[in-house]
Image: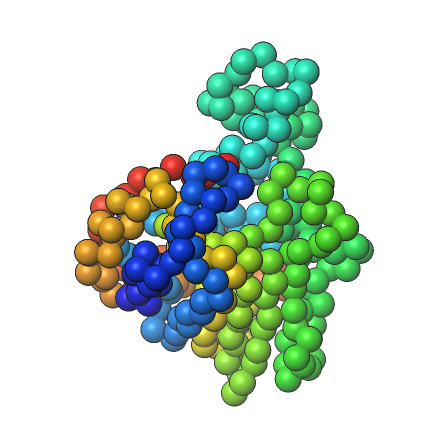
Length: 288
């Protein structure tokens, strides 16, 4: 994952200081691109520990069209908690509960989760129901029946529903490409938190590409990551400086044990990450 470290170094050295929505402040560059060869292993950052389980659970959550955090928190994934919690704090039902108490309620009370755990029509909703269109199924049909099509595209950016989302999609638009029965994917990401978010995005879309290739009897070739506003938050500077001093390890392999008729039937237990060696965790606070 030297390419990811080079991306951090580039923005750290050449980015410009910008204020942002969160008021934390960033150093930012615009219009960057990195390519990851999927034939060499699963692109996952090794210069700090990455929560593979969280990435995989989130991806399966997207694929199933889910937008409620209950599935995630029941599986120990807490990356989306802040946004519904902040929304809950604005409600008349809020009685000074901590975020830990809020998540406990999400876990044990289905009615509460239905009311306060939903993020609005975010990724999974758009992938599986964009104004009535199941984009994921359409993409799979094109990959099977017209793999040379230049229209194998899925968009999470739905202007008509942005105002209903607690967080508009950062990874907004992706396209598949087939050559010699090898599948590649290019993602356009409008907003890229390089320290916390981007490692998740690289691995998530790489897994998605590998999964779809496996599902259709193709081979996975490449993940192309195109970034709009690529930024490092000011409260992550020291973490990034530490990370770029570390030497990456060899990439692990991803094994998918089963093949199903329906893409949404894949479960967490169908995947195995093999030989993931990594440096120690580096903690950073998410900007909300």
